[in-house]
Image 1: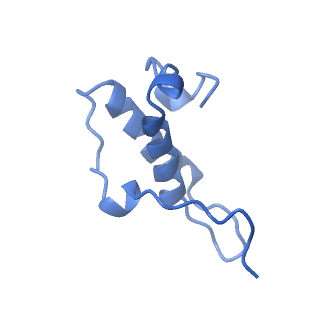
Image 2: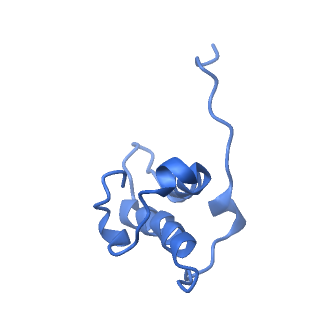
Length: 89
């Protein structure tokens, strides 16, 4: 995504957001992490769907005429605290 070649954002000028509006980028990564599903072995089950949900946010952020469908649910947009610097024993 940081290279400007994200195929789901073709035609969207989003690279300037990295330096000017980092909250938008933070939200994209939060959506991706919230939507991503893993099986019991840690294998990703829905990488493309999580990617689309995340990049649709950025597309809508840059182009207010773009409507995300289906609309986001609250849990998809939640921001979580980072983990502690070291795992607790």
